[in-house]
Length: 127
Image 1 (spheres, rainbow, N blue to C red):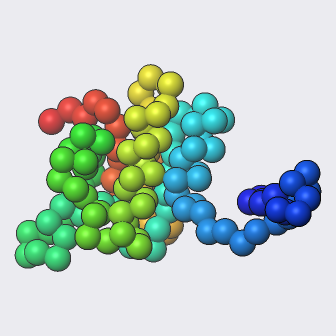
Image 2: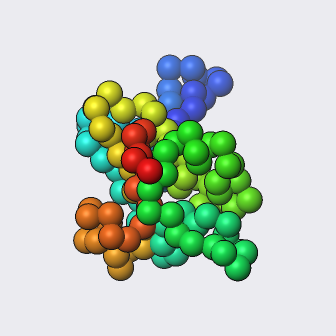
């Protein structure tokens, strides 16, 4: 709960309105819990390569470095951008070997575990 000190009485805290990034908060919580993986469910599927172009396709696998290098999601700061950054943060900040994150459609949640749908993000991706 976000709080602020009351200037006239600095020992007293009062609640304040705030907005949090739920995806980044989830990634931080997953790392604090020492989770093996972190799944972000959307209403639009995983991460698309060449989004909006005729050769667009949903990526099955990606590394954080690839996503950062291609600036994936940067054109969508209110939707996919924060989700992609949260997935990258989880994988980078995890102390678990083989930690992974995934982004995919809610209706495909069961298939995301088997990497049949959505995009799996991890450090080591075999070509």
